[in-house]
Length: 242
Image (cartoon, rainbow, N blue to C red):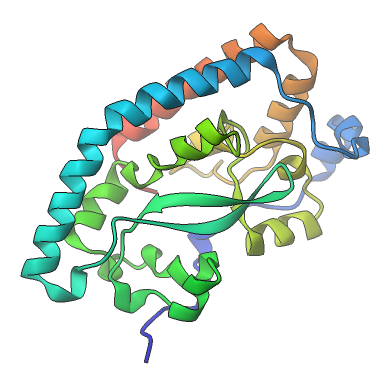
């Protein structure tokens, strides 16, 4: 019998419906009926950086694989694959969201995993479910590194609204939010760099980014992305693992 935890953790999806302020200030965004077109400098930057970081990450992946193997040998219940993916939504379409496994396999719902549902892996929010290697990986957000492959493929961007699982996307759309339909999902976003603060999940940041995406030149948008990345690096260095 699976020991998976099927209770949706509060931390997994703190995003709120659009406020009256958002509906008024960004009314023009809600009239857009198709995904926004790609921007040249943003795409070029994403490709170059993802190639560079995937190359630099290879030694990290190799070391983590060795650590996972050793931990699995010493503690059999902690053994398992290094990578997995679940289905997420980016620019309104289903993509594979790749991650590094943080939790023991007994906490993964096997049926949900076959369907690549996020809920199958939701036990990662329960600290006791994590392997020793998984705790370290989560602390420094190393579990997100495989998503640079999705950036290279064009499924994601480095900066943009965080791609959600199908479950959370449908809920987000049903409560009136449209940003994740309009733009490719990102590793970092204006809202995401507020991790660990009360502002995490405030949708106004995602609407502001869409607004800037529309108003700025291709180069101006790249400058904004660089600022978001700089702020994101500070979040990573803090090592909160939120």
